[in-house]
Length: 273
Image 1 (cartoon, one colour):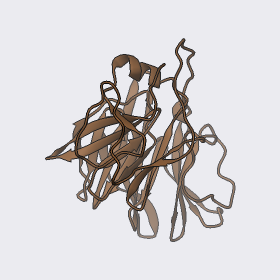
Image 2 (cartoon, rainbow, N blue to C red):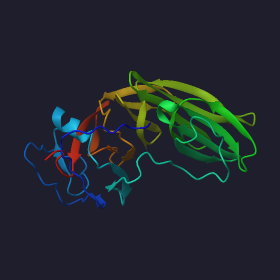
Image 3 (cartoon, rainbow, N blue to C red):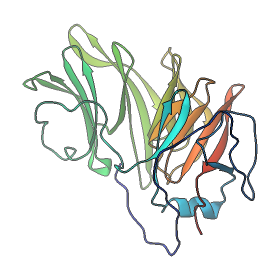
């Protein structure tokens, strides 16, 4: 979705350069920091308990974080291209329209491409295109936040949070009778923002919390968590099954705790000075 910039009279910290976790070094502690025994954060990141004021300031921060794994360790890298398109670049022109400028999610399939578009309040789309782009079929007109290749089936995470609107949906897209179509759908509790996978489960971070999509294609909210305004845009899962999400200013760790997850917040520098 598109974001609006608001000028506020605060100073927000930012940083540059990738940082990664270390297995034998505990993160430094800061005033108000808390400790636990879960997987270590990226090196240099400090666990904190955000306040309403620091979250409000972080909403206007200039630093956003993309997460990845390197040798099983979490790496946090400054995200310079906000809301990037994901997947291969298609070798042909896409249809022009209201959603054309939006970010793209692309998955290559056996007979071409599935292409999702998210242009925020200006709309979205999902279409199948042949490998040369000469044939196209519209599969939906929703905002497509992410496409995930599950092997023969593609998961489309769709929805929009804008003003009073906040809705989301998961659709499983498969090829039947030579035609790509939605074969199942589940309602999300809010607009999807980021995701990661653990085994057969897909964990979706929405504007309202963490939802698990299981192999039966059922959606279950496993942890309410409000992150709207921090724009989480990347997620990874480490070998312990701990979930990590990068967003504006913060990295959030979600540690499995029975049937739910316990959140831990980390920052590299104070949100406001």
